[in-house]
Amino acid sequence: MHPQSSNTHAIVLGASMAGLLTARVLSDHFDRVTLLERDAVADRPEARKGQPQTRHLHGLLASGLATMTRYFPDLPAALEAGGAVVGDFGETMQWHTYGGYRQRFSMGVKSALMSRPFLESLVRTRTVARPNITLVDNCAVRKLVVTADHSRVTGVEVEHRGGAESVEVLAADLVVDCTGRGSRTPQWLAELGYDAPAESEVKVNVGYATQIFRRNPDDPRSTDWILMTPEAPRETRFGGMFPIEGDRWIVSMGGWAGDHAPTDAEGFLAYARSLPAPDIYNIMRASEPLSDVYPYKFASSLRRHYEKLARFPVGYLVLGDAICSFNPTYGQGMTSAAMQAAALDELLAQRSSALDGIAPGFFKRAAKVIDTPWQLAVGEDFRYPQTTGPKPAGVDLLNRYVAAVHRATLVDPEVGRAFGKVMNLMAPPPSLMTPAIMLRVWRANRQLRRHPLQPASSSVAAAAD
Image (spheres, rainbow, N blue to C red):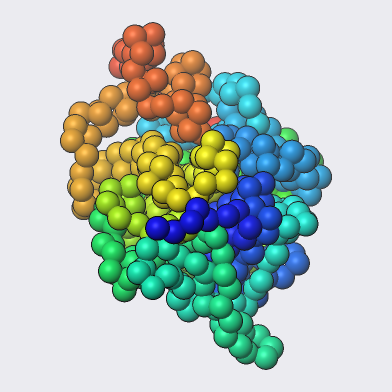
């Protein structure tokens, strides 16, 4: 029998968004928290070597901002002061899909538009400012340290890099793996005699490219976010143009099933022109480029089912992309990580100081957090026949109804509001199937059949000409 572990020291592996949020949560429950990061961390916004995705367009869903604000109450004000665009998600959108533009609506809650490095720098500054949190960078984790019977993780063996290299064992009462999709936990578990988690992998072959442009803050269009999503499977291309800090636009465009954007400036602009509406193209051609075009490829969504394991070592957890990495085109990753960290916070508060047996309870809570964004992302991806992997039962029938919801948002802002709440993880997907919403969807689709929308330049496009 092992004594119950104390809440003296927690170690978090990885100092990206999931790790930072986890460290912040653990600082309320442990005397000391140590964040270990493999890369060097600068005291400024940056995309580190181990974060190739951070250079591209990111979305922070309204529920994600609300969750982060619980732990950093001044975050929205700091975002706005730094030049991010903070406002109502539904009132500032210019979203073209299914042959038209979604009607604008009021969500009643704030969301934020900014670069991922800027958001992460604000979160990191506030996290490491807490007196019981220490960030150690240039530090590679070599292996887990465990008891003789492998039943408990008691720390990690790390290699310090940069200056004088050294190897050190750090003891901890709890270790949390937030190292992302490349997590070594499955390998470590197998080496310790445990089963690795079963995996669900949905191959999407998504690729996109990103470029930064100068933005005129006095232009009335400058606080709108522009999005074009395809009517699958007939269309494969998407584009997003978001206002970010520094009076800049960030433009990301790409597609499913190998229909990726080129990385030369001329080809990238031509790709924008190929989108079903001219909004992004018109602003790009009139704006000064501030960066090269840089690519990113995402082969598959990957979910590791830790909640299904019968055995798991005490004193160890996994969180964030290390559990589940979603197709990034849906902007769910940061919000999912924040909600998983909040779920851990609630579980620790309920259990007081007891850590033994915490893993099964946490993984079940994390699975509930992940279920909705996974269902939304995988459901959309399976609109394409090229998508492969475990296909949820009934997804084709469900997708036919969701397509009707998409079309209804072009004429009915109430349906748009209901869809927006689901997309922002503020309401469960079944909320789109209440009798009232289904009636509105039916009426809107009947209206569109009788009076189809005529292709026309949007106000954004017209203003740019």
